[in-house]
Amino acid sequence: QVQLVESGGGLVQAGGSLRLSCTGSGRTFSTNSMGWFRQAPGKEREFVSAITSNGGSTYYADSVKGRFTISRDNAKNTVYLQMNSLKSEDTAVYYCAIRTYYSGSYVLRSQYAYWGQGTQVTVSS
Image (tube, rainbow, N blue to C red; front, top):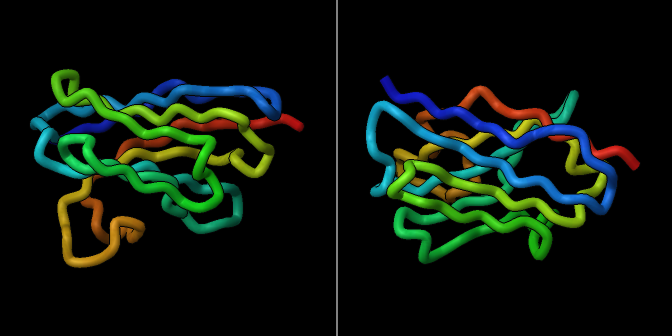
């Protein structure tokens, strides 16, 4: 059974940093692209960042470009999201996901079949 577990969320002041981790079990994900999404209260889940299977290419939403960095360690079956210069609008539940479909854009939730349970990030202003 495939399982993804996120960690590293919490409460931080604006301008601070957090590092999220997402560790998978049940199968290896080294051949899959991985993504991070987030969902704020009352809003739809939105794309944040993605990384290809070997880490050679990364993608970011415009709202986080230059502040967030995605990376992965395939030996540990783990993907990371380093979040710097956090803003109040970054407050959301953050989810990691495994991309299993490659018929559309990496920003689409439909491209990802497996999801973690999410970790809360709260940025106080």
